Amino acid sequence: MRAVASLAVVVTAVGCASGAATPSEPEAVETPTSTTRTPRVVDDSGRPQITFDPCLDIPDELLASSGFDPRSKRPKELPMGTYSFLGCDYRGTLHIPGVLRSYSLIILSGNVTLEEELAKNGHVATETVINGRRALQEVDPALSGSCAFVLESEFGIVILSRIYNADHTRGVPQTEWCAGFTELVTDIEPLIDG
Image 1: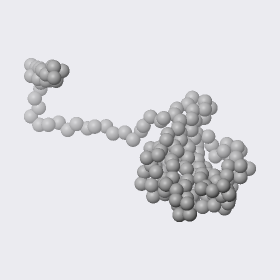
Image 2: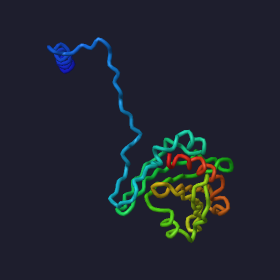
Image 3: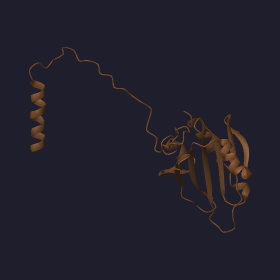
Image 4: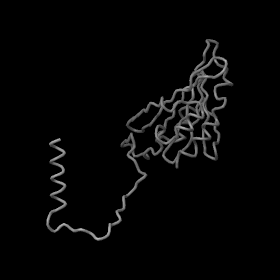
């Protein structure tokens, strides 16, 4: 209470100080707005800064309509010295055996080039195009149930990786690893350099 009373006295004293101007008309005050935000990861690599944050730049409604719980998002920062990644993990909706499959989604934005990714994972990658954007589809037999799309961006790449969490021990046929995933990737693509 004492702090509130002291603040009121200071405000009153400043408002009543001699020489204080009392404008006859209210002045319009412009509040500067900025769409620039500080990246979660910054490196000294000389590579472009990552401008797409998978945890902030994908609308919750888009994730929910694709079967992922936006409340489950877990941010990841991966500064590697010569390059960096920003990431976000999402859990799929509740799994109902025989009715609804369970998936996990990992999205990473990195300031490495598509050529570097192709050199690293070319043995499991197929070149493709998503909405006119150069991309790779990666299906690695060693990562059972996993499907990834790597999209080229102005700053580097965005990796969207979905994991099919099987509810049985038989394994998931490789033909099902990417089933239905292209639609989500196609919906996210326009957000990358926006």
